Image (tube, rainbow, N blue to C red):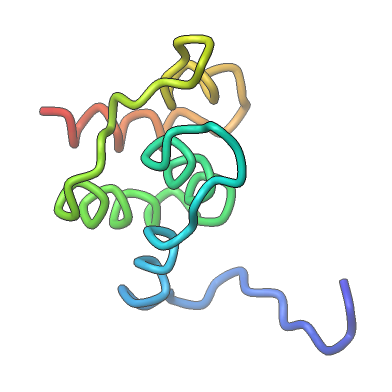
Length: 95
């Protein structure tokens, strides 16, 4: 990591910072909803991701968006070691 970059591990993230993940747009044919979920998954801790999902749903995005191969967010991350808390956040938001 560059010396001028601060590694953020334990600091609280504001709602505004979490909502920035709603603004990311795909550079390819990935559905915007799916792209936003994946970016947030990669960039947020599980408890922050849970907050993100609330904002995501509130903004009207689709938790069930699928890629060209028919994979939704859960299918894309389910084999990853730390994915369970993220999967549970999405399942809870689905109702």
